[in-house]
Length: 483
Image (cartoon, rainbow, N blue to C red; front, top):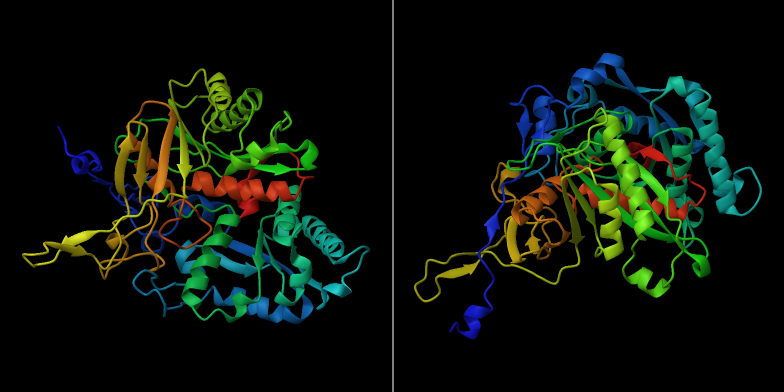
């Protein structure tokens, strides 16, 4: 009989390989583990196609008149070389926008630079400060829309002195701007005063440069296919938010587009559930959809995949969300996916209580091991049961630094993601490796990875925006409009 200590031991862990990124649709040698070093070495994934239809990314600006020159100087600085002075073990030299992306960064014509008064109280219109700010944003985007051929991305500056108007308990100017941008099909880049004073110019240039390129419809990188992932696999990310009168609350679910195996796919479905919430307390604890609503949103999402793949269905579909799948949700998903041979419903939990310490040889006979100065390696996986596993997407990633060990952020003991399979029968190692890979597909930052897969991050971000802006129609939108 096994002792109590033996019975409580966890199974052996697995170390998953760090996923690689691709920087060319045709040259398989143009791949790298590091997003920034890969960009600097090979250029962006869409370099061949992007430069074929435009030679520049043109920036329009909106903001207080007194900061007009500072906004122009900031954009001009992105054309220059910047050497990092912080996080040098990770951040490489920023070579300048054109050497990096193969197209020029240009200022839009004068008519596409809209100047607001310096004080938010001086904005024209009627109502409170928030109402006048919304009117100013809509007026600016309407004016830009009339000259849409003259720019690619609109830079919108909210100064710190406007904080009383830009964010309150019931209002977020960022979310309203993104919703208005979706209405006019104008990608926007929000700017605050910190961008003018941020001391680490290389980091700032990388972040802004990538964001502007993506919002202008560029693709910086995709995933190299993972070994063992069946061909024609796709991924969906779901997130829910309550909106409206809580006495008659409805769910809004944001579904990221069905991501392809390479992480591509930058559209999403905005869907308002038809069935009202019956138990609000339960809904706040564990949001879920009815069978009919789940069938409807998955069917619309699947239609996006088919539209991009000549009407073909995926052979395998993985659905991610952060809460447990209810039985009616699983039934609704299977109703919509009757033609898909393999379906996985995966709960991706980020609030795990588990922690891990990486032990190394101590060189001492009486204490053979000691804690490492770095956390467990990124990609460490522990199977907990036949349907659940822990995977550390945050951790030591020595492949990302020429100096060896590298822990993003450098603080605290990282928590693993907890993956729970509610439907499906595939390999847990494969499911964990897919989640690990999708943490590298958030194009809205310069980090090696995000704390959660992009399927979760995008859908959460979009659910919040749509919940805060109830007038946004439940349509299909390019994600770049909400970055």
